[in-house]
Length: 323
Image (cartoon, rainbow, N blue to C red; front, top):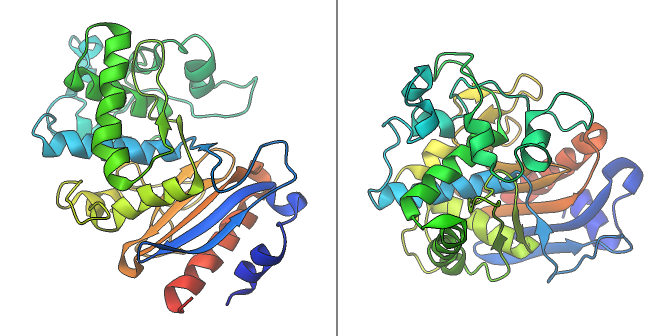
């Protein structure tokens, strides 16, 4: 067994190098093969405790789009149904451009309070009541499909498009219908009993940032991206949806990681899909090895590479050895 896994089994990783680690779990072949849950933090921890997804929710948004595409209710290559864009160049933006984070809209994804940041203004400032309207109001700065910018606003535009299709008169009915759709078509078939999706005041799923679930339920979601199937073998996602998610269409210049359709790829883990979130949330899916690893915690950006190194070591060990 790896030194990293043994260290988690014997003690908590030091906060000086890893921040707070709430949970690390690994599932292989549909079974939990390793689980660590932190303690002695201000944040409650344990197998039954839910934690925020932050941007791991973006990968759940990808699944939501897949359900509606499979139903024949969304077309990736049709112009995105955003009324604000009807009279200008933004009308050329497609749903595929949005999934690829290449709509060409102005956006600053900066998490440092006090600095220029569209994401902070959207979630907590002037856009907090209607995230999609805030994001859709951004001007076009590049031709759609030509320039990649990671954007939580882009995801929330997608969520409003999904909400429009699912329907509902007024914010309350819209929220309840979308919540029911997500629960019945995604969470329940996967056995994600703890999962709760959050909505803004306009009734739209905040698919950029807000799903709460246990570590085990984040692992259950990750299992969906092994083959696009439920645990009972029911087809959930369209054929080819997983492959599209992990086919890089851009490279993040800061990290060198690839980006597909609302999922990341890491060069150090060939073939894997990675959902990531603020402060060090990770769901790593390795389809060829039937392996999912989840890490939840609160880690400052400057030491997050230590967490990533641990997770790569755990995945490498588990994918090459029996547990």
